[in-house]
Amino acid sequence: MTKFKYIVFVLSLLLLSCNSGNDKKSNTDKNSLENSISSQKYDSLDYKVVNITKIDKDCQAKRFKGCEIVNINYPVFKGQQALNDTVRNKTVRIYAPFPADSTIEQQADHFMKEYLAFKEEPYAAGRSYVLNARHQILQNDRLLSMSIESEIYTGGAHGGSLIEFINWDIEKGVPVTLNDVIMKEHTKLFLKVAESIFRKKAGLKPQQSLSENYFFENNQFSLNDNYLFTPKGIKFIYNEYEIRAYAYGRTELFIPYETIKVIIKPKSLISNLFLEKDQVK
Figure 1 (cartoon, one colour):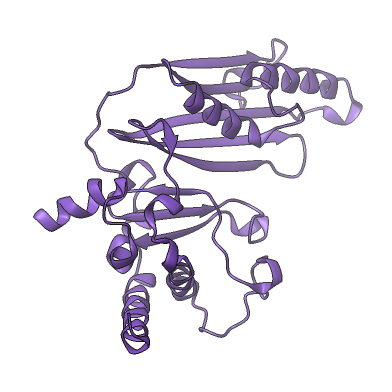
Figure 2 (figure 1 turned 180 degrees about the vertical axis):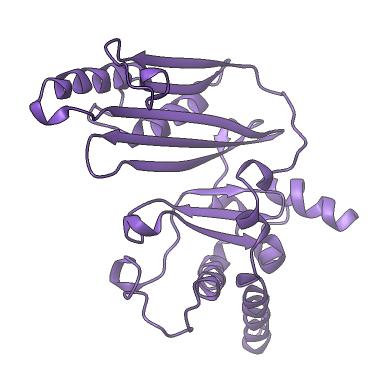
């Protein structure tokens, strides 16, 4: 590719990103997490849902739903140890005083013991602990997409929450990552497109400093590894405290495939599932 053609190529991508970055509201902003994924669902993996519930037997306050201190739901997939390990690792992130190889059950037991000790303190009156985690399989085709939404409260001024994503290639038994989807030689260009969309949505000028409202390292925009491949694009979520103060909550960034389709690997799983079908239509 000549230098002139490359410049035109870059400008065309950035122009597309500007047009998509500051609509009144993107579809993923309007809709719930569930609606960001195709309504078609398949059952190509066998799994069971495990529930861990721990209740404060002394609780009588109606404002605590059933007096539940711990309520965790998570899937266990048959014959998929690597996928199950990924689910566990992401589930325990919200509360992780244990070693990395701790089970979800051990985490729940430890949390409950901490709560029972907290109850004995004189300042604990009227306060409780909460540890919740909900897992939702958003799509189960060759690409298994999953969201893990967790929340925690330990008696302080406010609690915390996380949303994490898993993208899993069922056939190969491995995660699907950006490196599997974006052409290696265009990773920097992908980052530029993402930043253009981010700035457009945030109402920031191209050269405006990010340090005024964000925590990006060295004041340089960066993408995290928390993203979901949807039928229309890639959805990133920065969780609380990750790039902004707690009061701002989560920050979402949606990158439509339309803006990056020329730098997506033609034979990638994402291209096969979402782009080629659109081209046929």
